[in-house]
Length: 250
Image (cartoon, rainbow, N blue to C red; front, top):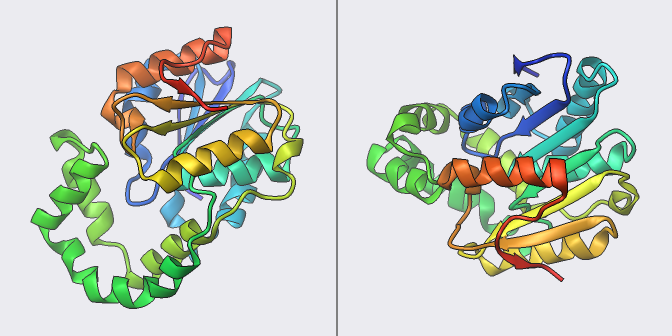
């Protein structure tokens, strides 16, 4: 798996795992802010065929190779958050801090059955810039990053997209998630779909050492929507255990 490294290799390892439809570039504001950490940013879509479990295993091996005995922080968004959940379940002792942003963990079997014909029908739209701009706006991808977003989405193969979405829609909380030994913060935006909020609540209830927050005035993609807010709450939670502003998930 391709990845980039930034910052101080002698400090805590901080891995950023991007979501579907975007790339490691979505974390540019974070690797700049956390330049005193050892930041590792993988590119997920280089894996074929795509598998959440296989990605998780590869990233755990990468952490073991790169951590140098330092504490490990894993931050994932959407598909990347699902991978982080899987990582916590496979090697519960390895990750000291995990931030799970907008992870879908309630499978949608009806949507999954409709997935293939729907994607094959609408796939040509992905090469249409007007459509891409609407999609980018929903993910808070601004003009600075639009061309990178458009390149990533328009060059994806239809079978690869179907496989990624199938993995996303069928993911559920792994049996061993409750064994994770580190601290876990789960976030979701208050403007996200109800199934995303239900997923966040399910994750909080599945782990006794987790905290969850519904973030005010945020949709799907807090780190792109408000990088400064995101960076501050990540830093404050890691260093002080302070929860971000929002509604606590009980």
